[in-house]
Image 1: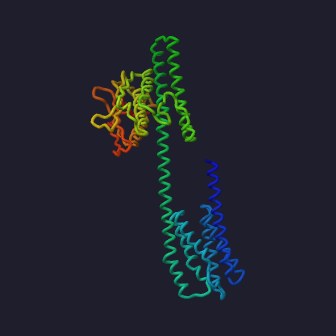
Image 2: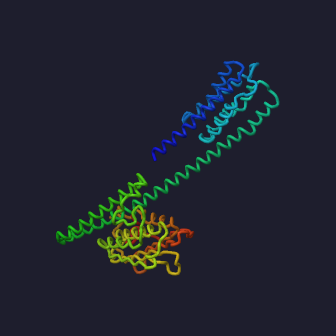
Image 3: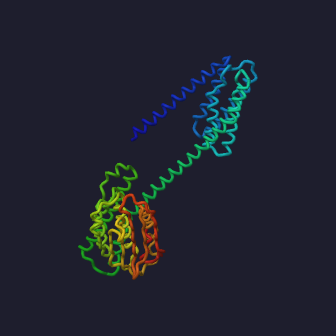
Length: 428
């Protein structure tokens, strides 16, 4: 990739260099049309200065453009006083360069500075035909064409290029923002899930120790092994994410962590969700996966299976963080009743309240989990609904299209949340 970029860079500079040499040669040929060597040399210098002003870096453009326009005006006024002048060309390359200076000024400079540069270069372009020997109606027509057509046209060209640059920059910023959001969602999905498991296991160990219960070496070893495994999984997910940021091709070849069946390449089969629920059940409430046979056997459009994994993963993470007193979590995936072209993913817990104050858990409730989840669901033209269940607990329902060409507009319908409530899924 680097060699290809260097090759393109060199080829572009080679083209620009050849074009510059050709224009300088034309300037020299036009200069030789002057009747006296000093006049020829002055015409060549003026033309080269105008061409050079087009090629200078942006920070030097204003001074070079003003200088080139001033030299051109002085030369024109001086030649207009002489009895012998060029017989047929006043310097058409220089004229074109002056007009292009106006377009560049409009494109790159602020309106006030552009106005001054346009005035200077346009004045030099308008009076430049006065260098020619015969002043007749054709000369007046040429000046009129420059004033009425050429100068306004170059200003319009500059404005169009300025608008194009603005739209392109906005597009680039939108792409960068989308990439930042994607990276934020990936970090949350792959890392926060495991870190939350570490926090939950550590809290359980501290609670057991504070209660005065004596733990056997086997229990301690099992608990520490779970913490170690969650930490290793978080580290593996972080490595995969860093590889994705550094090199997309390297990320494609990255081995997926065992606990992240979705990985950077996406979930291959809905049945892989069983490993996620089993892992959750080891250190949290019992999680049951109910996968309808027709959903398990049906091939899913690209991105849908991964979105299902994110919905289940984020919902389980929120249960672990916020659902105080939850004893059971039901994960149900199946074709939506009455709509065979839509997949319904439901995650419900039976938490019963009694949350600790928000101040006691400052690392939780940052509110980005469901925001990122809603963005993911919207990207595949689905909709997600979250809210409390009748009788206690929290319910997350995502409806996703099974038809890859589905065009239904994504809608995120979220019930009012209370971040201090035990089941409020304002994920962190």
